[in-house]
Structures are given as C-alpha cells and as structure tokens.
Length: 270
Ligand code: SF4
Image (cartoon, rainbow, N blue to C red; front, side, top):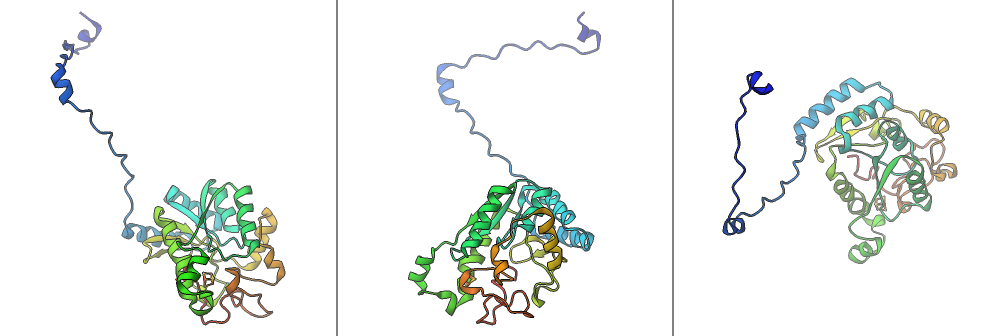
C-alpha cells in the first residue's frame, strides 16, 4: 500500500490524453488571450463619500499627512497638478509617494522662467512630470479665433488652453492634488482640504489649503525647493504671461491675474 493510500487518499489512474486526428487539430483553434481584468473603478458616489470622510478626518492635519492619505486611498490613480510657480506641492507629495505623476498644463504661453522650473522639477525631484498641451498650438488658435484671444475672450482661451487639457489629463485618475490656499484670495477662502469635484467626478485634494505664505516660505527654505525666480521680481501669482502682471503693495496676491477683467480664476478650480 502506498503512503497516500495509507493516509486514506485513493489514487485514480488517469489515462494519457487521446491524440487528436489531423482533421480535429485543424478545427480546434487556440483560445484568445484573456483581456486583462481592470481593477474595479470607484463610482463618483463612492469617491464623493471618500472625499467627505477624508475632509472630516484631515481638516487641521499636516500637509504630508493629507498627501499620504490620498496616496494610500488612490494609489496610481492619484496625481499632482502644478503651475510650476514653485515645487512645494510636488515636493510634499513626492516625499510620501515617490514617482508620483505631476501634471503641468503647458499652454504655450508661460514665462520662460516657468518652463525652467518645470525642467528643474523633472530633473531633481522623484516625480514623473507630464506636460499636457492644448489641442491647438498658439498659432493654430490665432488662425481659427484671431490673434490675442486672451485680450478679447479670456474664458474661451482658458477653456481651450487649460480646462479642456486638464480634463483630458485627469481622465486616468480618481483624485488629484492642487496647491490652492485659503489665504490667496477671497474666492479661495473656503477651500476644503479634501473635496469632490462634481463636474469631473473626482476627488480634489488640497494639502496646503490652510497654509499661509509664511508656511510656504518656511518649507521652501527648509527643503531648498525650486521656486520661480519671477517671485523675486514683483510677481505674487503666476500664470500665462499675457494675463499676469506684478502686484502692488497691499494688493491681494492674485490681483495681478487677468487684471484688465473681472475674471479671477482660469476655470480649473471652479
Ligand atoms: S491665462 Fe490668459 S493666455 Fe493663459 S489660457 Fe487663460 S486667457 Fe489664455
């Protein structure tokens, strides 16, 4: 008696598989490779509930903790957006999630100093910078809509060069981090640390929402974070060069954006 029989397990003799005739072999086609099964995606309702819970838990938490929560919740379906005014947010998130995607909206109308920071961030931080371009080059837009659309219809210009590209860039993510701060302007005074964007159906994380400019300066000094040199030349908020001017003493930091218009936001954060 074999050891297996002794253990109560009966061996069953299995015949060798029959050989297929040549005709049958021709009829039997190999099965197609199975499609890779995608991880179940969260629905907007689920993401909304996660955002509400995250905001409740994290209000008052340090920026690193907020970023870590987002990285753990969303994994590779979480990215950072950066205007490359400075690299503070990218730096914070890269410390808790090295290799994180950093989305930069390359409107084609940034200051050269801004492109310099983008390249510096890509070269020195453990992040993956993704430069996202509008569907039309500046020249093509001029051809279709007339030159200097930003002077006549900045909302349309921002939509084509920022809002649509951001929507396209975020398609593969459930959540993104932005560098909004409550002290930047009255329109940002109620920024939550974690919110749900119903238009995009995604979670928006604002790790430095509660920071002041002093907090930002302190972080930059402590970690030697790249900063756009235009801040040393009188600018306090940076966007495309046609729509950004230096600010005067006493003005709010975003007063130099679209200064000729009522417009205060490009549409990315509305
Ligand atoms: S900030 Fe000005 S130039 Fe840039 S996309 Fe908006 S309107 Fe156009």
